[in-house]
Image 1: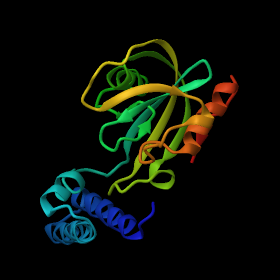
Image 2: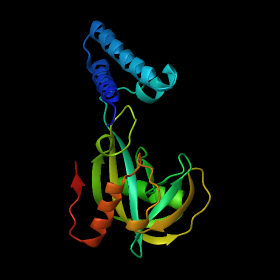
Image 3: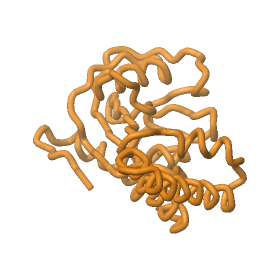
Image 4: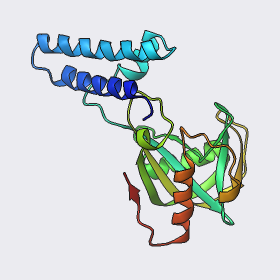
Length: 205
């Protein structure tokens, strides 16, 4: 995480959310609500987001706060890896996105490949599980687990969609500009390395 204030705001929000859930009396809950409001004020002060949007994205959940899950698919063909051109920033990433409720990791990988790249794939193994806040260019006020899944390509035919402008396969020495919020050069290199070895061990933080 690049910004210390964002880390502090995230931790304050996590403490407040747990306190609001498990606080034993109204006095305690009122104090935790004040902490949550303070975390929202910090984000508002350092970003251009308004209070209501911050509350919707950051301070509207209940229960014990846990990381969100981002699933990325590493799909290879003839020594090259599949990347999609993101509409949101014009840069390139492995097909992927937030895991849906009641959806498995493999189902998420299959869905994202098809929706973003028109690729039909079969998930094979998990290569990397990173805490995105430590490895990626994240400005999210919450923690993210990034799960990279190696997938076997069955067929591929890109179709226009709402998220990506195109897709293509790239060698490790000719990668386009990466969307580092989604994946870094380090993470893609790990996927290439894993592809070489059947006995590659999953990398954890």
